[in-house]
Image (cartoon, rainbow, N blue to C red; front, side):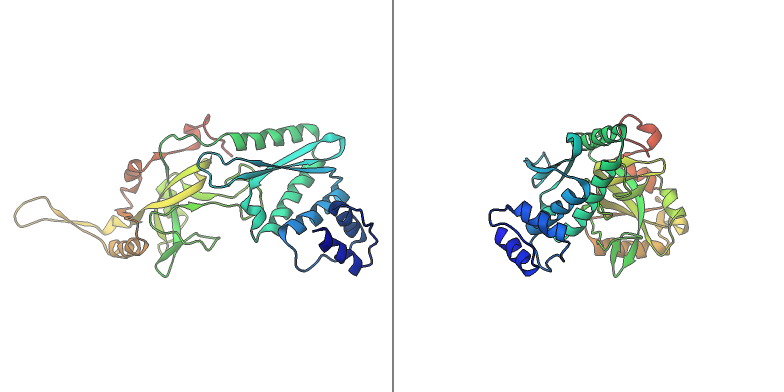
Amino acid sequence: MKDFFGKWAAQHDVAIDEGWTVEQICDALVKANVEWPAEMTNEQGWQLWTATLRRDLGVRAVKWDELSPREGEDGSTLEITFTLAASRTFVQRLPRERIRNDEFGQLCTGLERDLREWNTADLAEREAKMALLAAEWEVRAPDLMDHVVGYRAWNLNGGQIKPIGAGDDVWKGGEEVRASCKNGGLHVSPDSECECGLYAWHDFERVKANANESQVFGAVQAWGRIEVHSDGFRSEFMRPCMLAYDDSDDQLVSTLDGETPEVRRGPDFDRVTRIADLLGGDIEVVGYSVIQERGRDYGLTLSAKDTPDLFPST
């Protein structure tokens, strides 16, 4: 790495000493304000970025610690400690994989924003922020049941269902979707100070009121981190468990032998059943009038007023 930056300094006539460290060379390059190389590894980009933080924010040291995976997590987590003036420290944690992937530039942008906000905050604000970060790391949403149940709608696209408003992820039957912050945040999603996460309503009637009949309505099971709001919640993990059809046109048809009348489904039943078949995963198709009641079979229904001590409400 030292050779990489040494050659780049020579190309731009930036004077360096042969005994300088990588950090000293990067500091000289940033001070000279030369154009960054077009091709860099994430590790090289990190060196230049931290040199920028030393120049612009007075960051004195950056310490890395690798934390062992917690139960239920696949990979390790990096804890990054930034030491600023007066020995103030700002700590962030992020999955190691985020350092390796193609979103590295976005990651640095978000982390720099958080660090700038921290650097300009007063003492009380900094203490509150660190307490929040510690709580988010140590505390997980309790397992009230295996899952929490909510209700939402999707757009139908070629026999697939996709989120409304943002994202290209395809939701498949029985398969979980995991939230990630699309705003550049370096936190587990959902975060109490961000709008990220997978959304659902507490009440199915709110779904109908905020969507249109061309979309697909249904119920979801959610788990992981959960942020509860007055009208719904945001979760870390979610998967569809039921799709709903308009059963207002269902009819009870008497049988000739006097046995229990049969239910003749309305026209929307066939449409939604075809979607469920395409999605797979044994998704149940139920009517609008019964989906809220059937939701109790799939997990717990939450509301902000019912769980004040378990979940934060924003």
